[in-house]
Image (cartoon, helix red, strand yellow):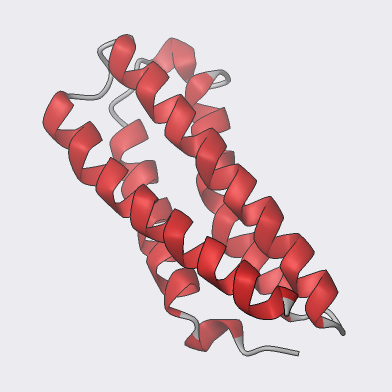
Amino acid sequence: MHNYKELNVWKRSIKLAVKVYKLSQKFPSDERFGLTSQIRRCAVSVPSNIAEGAGRRTNGEFVNFLGISHGSICELETQLYIGFELEYIGADQLEEISLEVTEIQKMLYSLIIKFEK
């Protein structure tokens, strides 16, 4: 069992989820059940799966959930680009949040490699 609260990737993904929630508040109200909902679920999925995996019994299970988190952050990045194309997100906002997404992707990948050994 791992203490997820001590993992920097978990802490940063929590902050990213909060940023995504605040950013998506400005999406049109008719997107409430569409892109807004989807983008928020992805953002929350990243730290949630890190935490769930950390609570499992084996490193293999932990790696599996880290992989799910990695998939969720890639999905989130895709949805952010869709939001940009729909002009819900500005170029500066997208660039800022994309940098954070990329860093979290790298951190997840590094943890996966570490615990696969």
